[in-house]
Image (tube, rainbow, N blue to C red; front, side, top):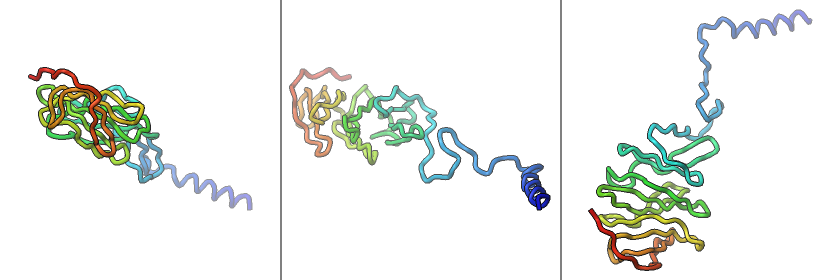
Length: 183
């Protein structure tokens, strides 16, 4: 009986030896397990990325631009591609204290900065200030509002510091400032 069990064990072990195909059936990829999952593969960025801010980073090289988020398995694309027109690059992304929103800034021709609010749940970017106007993102207020500085007039807004409700996009002026020169 022992002989039969020993022969079966040897036969099972030898079955895998001598096979011409030595490549594993599932190739492990960096930062992922070899077990099949439904999760997307992590991003291996081929474009330069800026230093992360609280788990978010901007990657841009003027031919591609995106915002990435750090997950347990690595960096993943949150907002793919250009936010508006070609030539508009993501410049900064500052997460809200509750990490539900990003206050993001782009740069376009003539060094104009545009302001966006991005949902970290969906990756949907909503434009706040654009169209030939110039703005800079500042960060988040203790009340959960996004703060930005408008440098040139935009629609019915004059240059100054503003607060923005990320849900309603309601803008409230904090204080006025003198207009900045354009190009």
